[in-house]
Image (cartoon, rainbow, N blue to C red):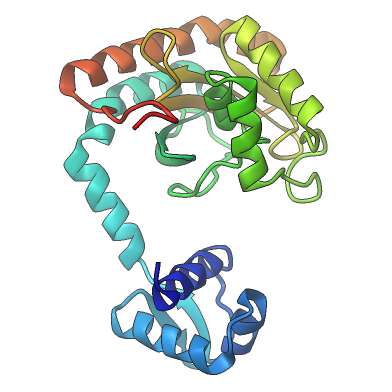
Length: 264
């Protein structure tokens, strides 16, 4: 990959993590890019419409252009159209936030959500972001369908989430992570309690065909005052049925046709 392209992607990924904008000097320092080279990259991205400058401060922020490309792909692929009725039913029955994430290579990305009917506080992570595999129920639901070695390799590449950035019970060691995955395999779905965020719980199940690795994940998330262990146990069978239905629908439509992880 060319240096210019690599730097452009690095800048976009950095700005994605800083939605409020960052000045040129801090971007260059954070990415270890010479300031003059960083300025050229930002100028090109600005020309192409991927970033803009906040005039009063001179800081750079991402535009919605990159998001629109991703949404355009999802629209043309039909993934969201097919999944929406299933996710909508999960949200309606649970009364919480239901999400769909899809596996793409070594990444798991949230691509769609449906709110439950309850009013009040909502747990709502940004759509379009990659899930932190070590400390999300969605990540665990995918990893539980892989071997321990594959799961550890993926998390090691992405990095463990720190409890200061996530929940107080976020696993920070391989042993702790495997404890979550082994328990998830036994029950058939992943569940977390104050792992992704304080006061939050979540449950997720893999969308898969037979014993193949997951091609997607359906999850339910909410405050632990509502979504406690007893409630999760009640919702588990419904969630598993939803993943089986989506796997069947996707097979009939030809979606999620990528080979499993590690296959050519």
